[in-house]
Image (cartoon, rainbow, N blue to C red):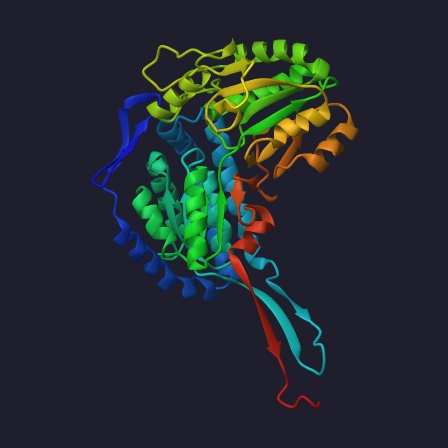
Amino acid sequence: MTTDAATLVSRNPADPDDIVVRLRPPGAHAAAEAVERARAAQPGWLRGGGAARAAALGAVATALEAAAGELADLAVREVGKPLAEARAEVARTVAIWRYYAQAPYAPTGAVHEPAAGGGLLLSRRRPHGVAGLVTPWNFPFAIPTWKAAPALAVGNTVVLKPAPEATACAQRLAEIVQQALPERVFTLLPGGAVEGEALIETADVASFTGSTPVGRAVAHAATARGIPAQTEMGGLNAAIVLPDADMGRAAAHIAAAVAGFAGQKCTATSRIIAVGAALEPLREALAEAFRALPVGDPADPATVCGPLVAANARDRVVASWQGLSALAGATVPDSPGWYAAPTLVEKVPPGHRLLTEEVFGPLAALLPADDLAHAVRITNSVPYGLVTSVHTGALDAVLYGLDLVDTGMIRVNAPSTGVDFHLPFGGTKHSGHGPREQGGAALEFYTSSRTYTLAPEDTAT
């Protein structure tokens, strides 16, 4: 992908000569106009009622399901997502629209007893207005959906600014969504930083997923304007493996969480912490699991690790393993695409970038820990707090970790990757700011609470 004031170009990561889309970014003024049009459409969308909104969101799900094969192929081509993962993402996208299609029927408030006298006290949640959504390229259908669907369900209109690398995916998603919704209820705003900044400066509520520096800037801008904002940012996620774990199973889960989609997930594992006697058997099992990972053409259904999204992303991964002791990988396949082999390193010195920064690639460090308490300290030592996986056969160890690990999500005997869209999603520290996404938490975020007092004219009766 390249973008400047004149041109945005999205390329196929497996074949960089293949240009998927080229367009002229519309600019900041177009962003402001899109928000104003969406704001004008919002009262009608809300007044149409819950049944109409539910039907529209259900129609989106049906249309997306009918186009599932086409959408999966587009994700493979534009962002290099392996075909099996692309198909799973589209299926999840359909399920999310169906899940939120029921939300308009949910209660929006409660009736309370007055403190004195007659009348009614009501609390009710109402939409903010226009939801400005800024989304990344790595889940080009699911992330726009899990932001847009709840926002629309509760009566907001939406302006979506996708990552430039996923422009074609966003265009196709918008075409399908717009066919089921009234005009200007869902607006696509392609472009780069200029358009994204303008959207945050004009929307009534903002949701962002992407890098930590940009996410913090979004949070500051939204706070300065006094609008609600949530920002989901990076991760430096750990997998803790105890001696009583099934080493083969743990290694398979971890290797997939490191290298699936070339590690380009905020929930990918990047630190593997072996507790005590787990180190040697885990070391061997991981090296074998990494070497067995299918790497190659993302259009091949067997591929687990495809290309990085861009040349500079591949170069960042390669630079990160330089000078380290590799147990597996640390090679660049001879291919025209932006590939890097899944890589496992050990003996990483303190302060190395792998232990302090998110690399966002198929690369992880194996670290020893004396005991579980030491493993927890290592896990918590980074500025991120998104997800931790714990691999063990002992419930007491899991309970200990649940109490002391300071990440937003903990997954036991499962990969760090994977999202349950009906539950809250998000992290602590530099991984997230503001309320959680997904599930019922999203419905609360896209609304504000109102309190109503209905007093009878004659308060003596």
